[in-house]
Structure formats: structure tokens, C-alpha cells
Length: 324
Image 1: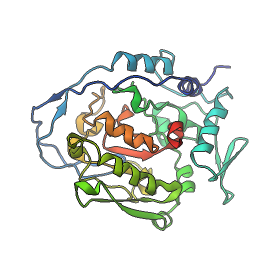
Image 2: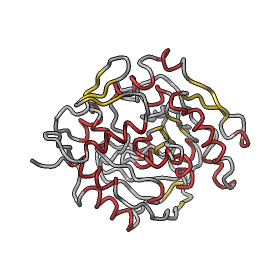
Image 3: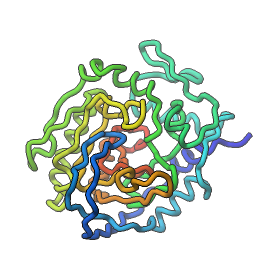
Image 4: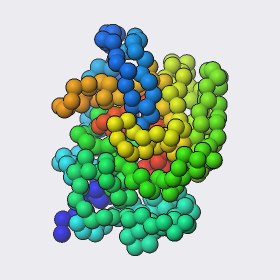
């Protein structure tokens, strides 16, 4: 039987040495045309109607980055995920998930079982396109694309490579709460980089996410002043809402995601208003900021082909070393 591509990529990622340095960022000073109000898919902040912003010039991924993607994908383009047979590596994904959320659930056969008795299918056995993965993911599908940490430096993701953007909503509801009231009962508001202003962010206390974000805040405010403009004012955290244009809940609805200053970030719909065609990857966020978030188990939306560079969400299953 053909080995599923998702497991091939996951196995490659698990043993991959991470040692590349960040690439330099090229900044241009050209003022863009007026920007229409828009909604981000994960955070839904309101983009300023007009402002002067620096635009990062387009550039290919660095050599080490390109090799990294090739090793993960076996040199091919990931257009679908084969779920028709069991494969080596499945247990690795299960072990990562169990370690990421200790005590929250157990895995029995082909089901993730929560203390409430709720059972969520691990692998539905279906072959899925990238579009299918977004709207109808099983739990195993969440590992379809391996996540390259900040230590790999800057790189433009291949087409449709969206590690962490594939989510099983039932799983997140079981983790954090199935209603706004259930989630709200466990949130906490913390100061955000208080040395730089009076901003706050509200996040869940589940899995110590509030404490981890407080640690992120403390480390970020100690970075040199050139990084401060990216951090504040933040665009928000907990907000019970759907991803714009979909019927799927945002991770912000669970209090497990935050957005930093939108003025210096890029979002694929904002940067590529025309429907269809290739998405020209853009990013202004320094990799040093990403490294701090990842240290505390928050992945970055800038690693997505459908990028959202303001966005960070708590996903320790993609960053096994963050728990150390």
C-alpha cells in the first residue's frame, strides 16, 4: 500500500536537524495604495484604512530553506493526503499530541477519548485535497504539514503548505470549551509588554497558556527597541468568533491565540486581493520575535502559505522541544 504523504513528512520532520540562520529582511519604502477594511481569517482585527507601512520585497526562500521543504515533501508538491492505509509514524503523531496536552485525553484505537466520554475519530481513512483538509479535518490530518521552527530562518512556504492551519474543531472544543461561556469561565487578562504601554491580552488558563504568554511578554519587552513597534498595540486574543468567511471557529474563540500589531504585519488576503493565482509571500516580522513565541509553544502564522504574520497560536504538538 502507498505510504501516506502526511506520515512521510512527519517522519522526516521528526528526525530533521534544525540549525539554519535567519535571512536578512529587505525593506522598501514605497507607499501602497489605500487599503480597504478587511478581516483576518484567524483574528479578525480591523486593518487601518490608510497608513504608511514598510513593504518587504519579494524574494525566494534561502537555500537551506528550500532543501528543508524538499526533504519534508520528498521533492514533490503536496496536493492531497492519502488516508487509505495505516502507516509507520502514526504513533509518533499520537505521542506528540498526548505529550502536548498532558492528561487532557487518551487515545484508544482509532479514537481520541476525553474524560467526558466524548470520542473523536483519529483517522477517518479518507483521501483529502488541501481544501478538504481545511473544512473537514480529522485529528490525524492536523499533522498533514510539518512545521518548520524559527531556527530554520526565513523561508517562503510551498503552495498550500499550512502547518497548524488544519484543525479539527471538535478536538479544540473538547480541549478548551464548546461554548463562549465555557471558554470565558477559564480566561485571564494579563499585561502585554507593560514596559511599552498599557496593553492587555485575555487568554485561557488551560495548560498554563496565560502564564506562558506572560513569559513571552516579559522576554519580548526586553528585546532591543528596534523590535518594539511590532508588538504594540496588539490586535487581540480571546474573542468567540468564526474565521471570517467560514463557519469554522477561530483559535481566538478558545483563548489560545494572539495577534500582534497589524501595522507591520502581512495577511495573504490583504496582500493578494485578486482571486486565484499564486500568493506572493510577504513578511515583516523579525524572526527573533517568532523565536520567543515558539520557546513557549506558540506557532506562527508566517509559516503558512496562506500567511497571517500577526498571528500566534498555542500548538505544542508542533514544537516538542518547547516543553523543555
